[in-house]
Amino acid sequence: MNLLALDTTTEICSIALAVNGAIYEHSIATHQGHSEHILNMINMLLAETEVSLSAIDLLAFGKGPGSFTGLRIGIGIAQGIAFARDIPAIPVSSLAAIAQSHESKKSLVAIDARIGEVYWGVYEKEDSGLTILKENELVCSPQEAPYVQGDDWLGLGSGWRSYENQLATRFNKSVIGWNSECYPKANAIAALAVDIFAQGISVTAEEILPTYIRNKVVRS
Image (tube, rainbow, N blue to C red; front, top):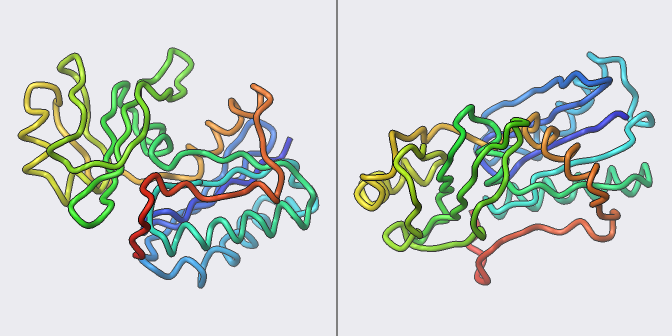
C-alpha cells in the first residue's frame, strides 16, 4: 500500500509518502505560503521515490485544528487528490500528530488558537509507539486547561510559546518541561493513519472536512 500524507495546519508545510514500510518526508517553514509550495513538494517527493500519483492507494491529511488558511488549503488538496484517484482518505488530528512527532510518552499538546485560547489535547503513547487520546480535544484559555494526573508530562506545541507563563504556572507540578517548536509532521500523520485504516476507518473525498473545534473560526 502506498500512502500519501500531508499537513498544512501550522506554519510548517509537511508531506510524507509511505511505501513498502518506509516513510519519506519533506517539511518546510512557510508561515502562510502553503499554497505556493505544497503541490511542488508532492511532485518532488513522488519523483524522488519514483512513485506516480496513480500508484497512491490511500491519502492521509491533518484535519485540524489549526490555522484557518492553512487548514483550508490542505483540505482542498486532499479533496482534489482523493477525487482524482477515487481513493479513501484518513483524517488525523493535528494535535495527535504533534504528540506522535515527539518521543515523549505523555504529552500535553497546545496549539495557539488566538484570542487568548489554545487548542488542547492530552495524549499517551502505547507500547506500539502510537499516540492515543486520553481526554477530549477542546479549545480553552490556558488558565482553564484541564488538570492531569502524574508529574512526568511534556508540554508540546506553539501554545507553550504563546502562553508559556500561564501554562507553566497551571501545570508546574505536572510537566517536566516543554517544547514549543514541535509541529505536526506528515510522517506522524502517516503512522497514525495506517493504524486508523487498519481499524476500518476512512472517509470518501466528499466527506473530507476540517475540524475547527471552536464554533467561531479565527482566520489566520
